[in-house]
Every structure is written in C-alpha cells, then in structure tokens.
Image 1 (cartoon, helix red, strand yellow):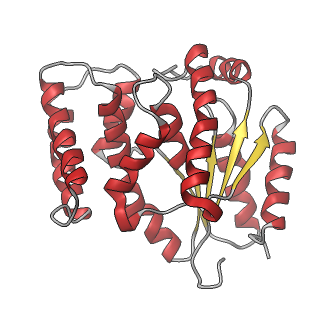
Image 2 (cartoon, rainbow, N blue to C red; image 1 turned 60 degrees about the horizontal axis):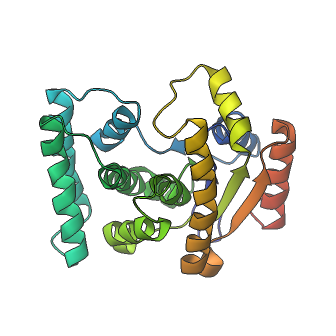
Length: 266
C-alpha cells in the first residue's frame, strides 16, 4: 500500500490472447491475497453499465434491441451527472453531443463508426474510474486492471480512422481532473500469430478486433500508444514490457520481480 494508505493501481495491457486476464485472475489477485493485501480484478470494457454492454454488443456484431438503446440513453444521463457536464469545455460539449447521437443511429440501424465505438469506450471507462477504480483505491484496495489507457489508444487507432493521440486527447477532455494513470503498467508483448492461436484454442467468440490482421495492426499501434502516453505522462507513465511468449510461470516471475524492484511489495 502507498504511504498515504491508497491502494496501488496496476494495469495489464496487450493484444487479445496475450495472457493478461489469466495473469490477473489466476496469479496476481491470489498472490496479493496471500500477502494479506486486498485486491480486485477489474476489466474494461465493463459489464457494469450500458456503455460497456453496448461496446461488447457492437464488437461482437450483435443486434441492438429497443431495451438496449433505452438503457444506453439512461446511462448517458447518468454520465452527465457524474462528470459535472455543465462545467466543461467546448470540446467536452462536442463529445457529449456526439455520444447522445449514438442511440439515434442505433434506432435507425446504422453502423457505428470507429469514433462512435471509441466514445462508448471512453464513457464506459469514465464510469468505471468514478464508480469503481477511484473508490477502491481510496479504500486501500489494490486494483488489478485488465485494459486501461493504452488499450483504447491502440485498438481505437488500428483501423486508421483515428490516431492514438486523438483518442488520448478525448480521454483527457472527458475525464479532466479525474484523469488517472496506473502506478505501474505491464505491457504483455506477444506476436499476433501466437495470440491468434490462443484465441482460437480458447473457443471464445472472435470479435471485431481479434482476427489475425486486426491483431497485427493493434500490436503496431500499441507501440505508438506507448510513445503518446510516455510523452504526455512523463515520469508517471511507468510502463514495463514483459515477454508474453514465455510460460505463465515465467511471466509471473518477471512481473513479481518488477513489483519488488519498484517498491510495490514491502
């Protein structure tokens, strides 16, 4: 735990199939529990609000029904109250106007653009930060985060419609003073071919971003996203690269060593 009694915020990043979810749930959370440290596994997109549900439906190519769209409209109103939307910039107003237009597109059965999807991701992330991550950290709990600031910039820019910097800028516009950066981020690096084999073997639904060519583009964009975050956050960035081609045991040991060396385990 940090000196001020706040829990540490540890994020795991990497392309789908890199092993970060397994690392979080099967090793990191039990590891901290064994040390007597309360920790939770948290993932984005979430399933805790209509934004996260809409994202999963969109990337898995599901059809939106009237109830889903109505829930999304209600969640937008909820978000407006959470972020103090009447005390923001013109850029924030543009973001919120665009977000409010998304349910109308769904009602007309129009396809969502990459910007639409990324604005939903950002809204889901904002609700997650305000409703789960910050309260947990402030209560002294370690949050093991499965996807965070790098993922949006990498995945959202993979199709070439947006850049990682544009996506990160929109993140800052929405969150403003609630913008936070993980205390440490582990980038689990694997070849797209390895990740694709793992995903196919898992039997899970392959979503919009998980084909081999998509994973190759995302992997490239992660490098740019890391540069963007390093440049903007400077010493707060604290991104550690881990070789995800190794066995889970080796990856766990590498992560543990980095936590020890940086003073997260005392």
